[in-house]
Image (cartoon, rainbow, N blue to C red; front, side):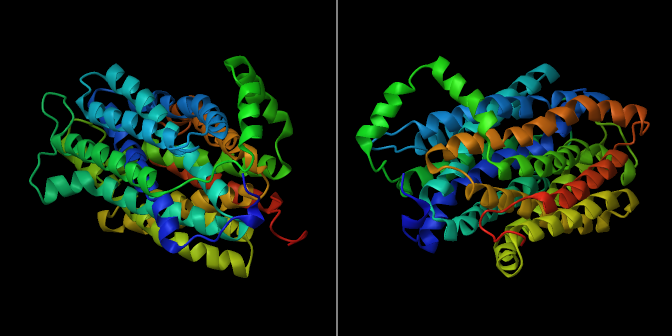
Length: 442
């Protein structure tokens, strides 16, 4: 691997090509985030149990991401390169899962497919984070992650709007018949599966990778580390040697992702009760609430796509951690404020603030972290960093249902308020993070 200072400056279109796959990856995540609770509820899930069913996603990430990161660090193929084999395999499997998800006929089937889908998405997504560290010097890393955030934002906008587009513009039925998933959701997942695969394939075919500088030494290292036992030992051993910056960011990530997980799980039921006045998942009003949540998520995703290119400018004028702190505080207040909104036309307002926070969550922690990681273990440590995304989601999955039922009497909008508080706490904790790219005391 080249040192950060010796890596060539890439053009705008090279950055575009290497990041375009995230447009497709986010179709998978956005459809999952906006529609999974709706699918579970339509198939008969109790609102108190939703967070438990969602455990599939973080548990899969916890297991898959460090392993994929480690394997991609130790892979080289003369045609496929280092990261691109994982892009392709993950995209193929995720696309298949996206076609299967809306055809679930029982709740247990939907939960199993969520496990498969999230695992496949993680296989293709994690090496994309390391890809930026591989190809870009420190001067372009923030721009590289910002380009990924741009595609994440626009992919999520379109994917989140798909059920509404099918219902309002194409006349597709949005009503569940005999407890089945509405056609709007089924067709959205079909479109998402196709776009996911094609977008990732674009990056696979257009982005090139640089081989290791010393191929003989790399091959020798591959032979030395071959075997599952050695791989597991390396993966677990790395936890004791995490860079200090990574440990500091872990606390920020923990509270940020509790807030996001609460939002993804409970927004549909919260809007159904708080705005549409229903908790009946089989009702037309609840399904309309589901479509409206897709529009809300499209707003925050669109805002994040725009903010992705503005935040690096503010970061250069202030600091990356100041920008991240400010964005998280804005997002926390915005998520909390949903409780006070009962007007359908005002639901997009808090999503503007959430979108600003989402843009920073997808950009600043990775940019800060990339400067603190050894180049040859970039994929591994990016995978380990994902633990601090999945662990808070697991905590949320185990506890939020209990909290919602026993503390908030089943009113899920109050769970969103709790998420807002957690995001604000994450903003304050950002003050303790040390960014190696900035002078001490900045």
